[in-house]
Length: 278
Image (cartoon, rainbow, N blue to C red):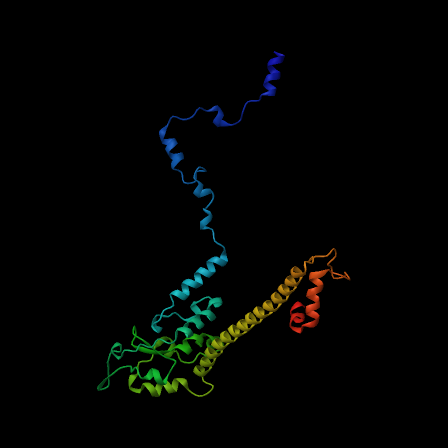
């Protein structure tokens, strides 16, 4: 009896109900467990595939590329600039300016409208006098690309101005050029300010590109000078059969041995090499 109690104490009964209950013979229960989408046997629910994981930066780049690829051409179909993410607005403005205003070249695309006693329509020749002018086939109306791009900027300053050339569309063809000149206005008008913003935006891009090109050319020139000096030192040592490295080549060493000392010699006697070695 004592031995029996010792065995029971060493091997306590299991509390796992699955070990004490026999497996169920009910096919419905097995089907439910196998069809359960939350089952741990389904790997897609426990860990998503790695190729579906993307960083926020990658998603942002993809979103911006899609926006640029789907910018509406017709001014009537464009959403306000405030619709876009503020982080994207400058690039979107630049994309529209690089594309240019929507200016269909075929006069047949402009339908005639009865105004008073005469049929009138938008004239293609107006594009030659007003470079900012756009025409919407969807609405048969004229718009201003410069004001469209920067009107929201003036709205924030409480200087909204008219929205005829940005949202409603201009359709009074009887006095087209006269109204276009009124829209441009004086030197300090909102249209002229918007035009200046467009010019500054494109000049800023060109200025940055020019600086990058100059820096790239300068870096390429510096690299060529240093490479030429290093090759000259290498050729000399190989021709003379001399070793390159010394035992101590630190800055505090009085003799850095052949290669470093020869390169320093060239720098001391050639200003171009000396400036690039600094």
